[in-house]
Length: 140
Image (tube, rainbow, N blue to C red):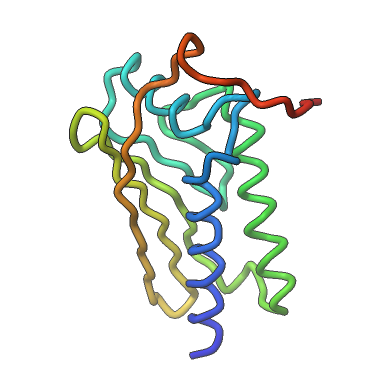
């Protein structure tokens, strides 16, 4: 039981960070950038596989954030003295459900086939540098 609670808490933390305004892509809110990408590609679902470090559809500009969240998953699993072998799936899915409304889901499945899914509805508009302030963070 403890393992499943820990895995669920890890994914809750990742989901919380992912939807945060601090999740930025080269200075702009990551979710807004993803939403703009989804509209440009005319897709209603954007999937991030944290175990395999892939995105569908692939979005080159978000690659470094994908690696950040995949690394965060590994770091938090190891911090709790668990093993990545205990995880069969860890993913984030963004679904465009209505104009300006996204459902962001985090899902984790353990080696005992227990699945935990958590979701949040987010009001979001596509990235637009003309109305957004850019973060002052430095990027390598």
